[in-house]
Amino acid sequence: MRPPLRAVAMLAATAALITGCNSGDDWSQPRPRPAAIGSLGPGFIDPSTTPAPEATVKPRPGSWAGVHPSKDYRVVLLTAGDDRPTKALVTAVEDWADDEGVALRKVVVGDAHDAVPGITRAMEMGPDLIVTAGNDLIDPLALVTPNHLDQQFLVVGAELAEPTHNVTAADWSGASFRGEGLGMSSTYDPDSFTAERCAAAIRAGVAAVLTDLTGIVVWLDEPQ
Image (cartoon, rainbow, N blue to C red; front, side):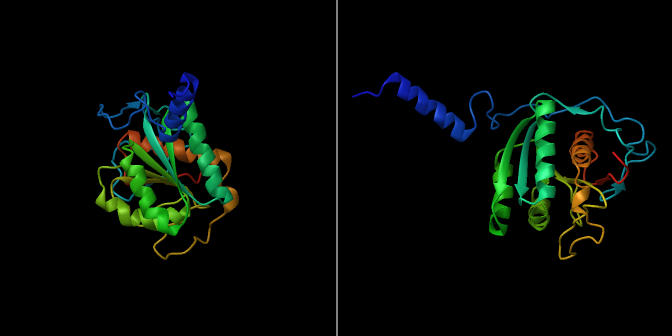
């Protein structure tokens, strides 16, 4: 006996939810390189020079506000940990994606053994940018990112000790975890992960990536 049409429709809808992909959001299809809409304001960087790799820039608050991603910018949020700072960063990224109309997918890393496979899963989705939140991802990122220079990463609320040109960070003194056995910074302060600071981190970091200022640390110590 053939199942009722209603049951068939419900099964199809369930399958679509599980895969998270249909003809309208198939990231496997080629498309033009995404572009920045707008431009950086005065004070983001010194206009007379281009930041060197691994440099730290200290943008004027709000100097990134004029830069937005093009329509359907594809971002994977890669996250590890359920501590309050990580949750604050995740909320900021999700709010930013909603405000900007970004196509956002999420990969949650369960434990240390899942970190490298989690990064791999994020890359296999084919995003324009992978945004990471959670200190437990820093050492795995240092291991993986130099071997995948065509994939852009943005680390919010932490940084890599020696980033390659495809890894940008948005950080501040109350965050500043760098991994590689260096331990937690003496200035680490979980209370510094305010909604305002986390929102600034994702917006300033994405603005840097979109304008090809990659492989640097965007330092956000000034009040936001």
